[in-house]
Amino acid sequence: MTERVSRSGAPRSGPARSGGAARAGQARGGGAAARRGQGELDLDEVALDPKTRIIVCCGSGGVGKTTTAAALALRAAEQGRKVVVLTIDPARRLAQSMGLTELDNTPRRVDTGDSGDETGAADKGGELHAMMLDMKRTFDEIVSAHATPDRAEQIFANPFYQSLSSSFAGTQEYMAMEKLGQLRARDEWDLIVVDTPPSRSALDFLDAPQRLGRFLDGRMLRLLLAPARAGGRAYLKVVGASFGLFTRILTKIIGTDALRDLSSFVGALETMFGGFRERAQQTYQLLSTPGTAFLVVAAPEPDALREASYFVERLSEQGMPLAGLVLNRVRRSLAPELSAGRAEVAAAALDEQGGHATTAAVLRLHAERMTLATRDRRMRDRFTSAHPDVAVAEVPALPEDVHDLDGLRAVGRALSGERPTAP
Image (cartoon, rainbow, N blue to C red; front, top):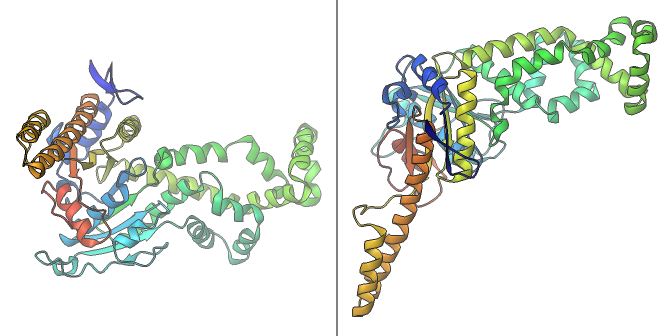
């Protein structure tokens, strides 16, 4: 029996469920998680491995997931790999940190320049590109590629398509699968780094093939296809008496015109549905191969690590190759041998002597930092007790937020096991 993290952030008894993640890591063929086990995770071993073609970063919001993805991509590019980083998060932090005014559905080249004591990506033959998923544009591209011009125009003009392609629940996950599959099929990049949405829905794209299959095989879809297959005038004959009640109720709810639009839309897309399912399944299989590595990103906080446990267990259940956990913003002290208690006692003694106010204040500040560092270490230990097979890479808390390439380089050095310097 091992300890697991409960919903309150405290450990509880129960069998660890990360064995699947360990087996997936071993399946990568010598990945960092497999080699290091419970120890430290050196992400250079993952991102710079020629066998690694896709890295997927997932985790809750506000834990530095976007920064982690960008830092990994930049470091791999500056070590000679041709990299594209794809963000599904609508926030603009990725573009800002890379010096771009905007990101869109097309990969944009990032000028890594000369980084002082390091060389830019181009100097070693590497390149860095960045992009942000535009789910409507991706959907439009799919329609244009798999439909005749006339049929595509009919689809684009349909009100249901306009809603589905821009805001319908689940569309983003489908389009993320499509875009990732497109990027991999083009075979232009050595490495694709994916920054997922900041929520549990970040892994919903793993269910895309199954959910799409249930939708395509469902009775509701067959009902909606009936009038489109038969033609508008033959609608009632095709539907028949057994479906009469259904159509009357649906017509009352959404109206005759809306029902006609919906039926027309589903009919227009019918020839494309098989392709959707096939491509989604291919991308799912791609994610489960040894060339893919999943990274769970968290901060040393109860809520963030609770979410990290969810992601680890979900990936384990799906048999996905988990490389390990990135623990961001870990507090550390430059004098760990001086405990918080001893520092407090020394500060109190100096107060009694008098004339040492500054030194006493420094000691109390150190005591506070040591308390926070101890807390962060305890949080990490709880996680590793629950998931002993998951390797961990720590990124120490930096003195300021990451907002440029130098900041990303500092994070990249930490991910590789080096102590980062202030940006």
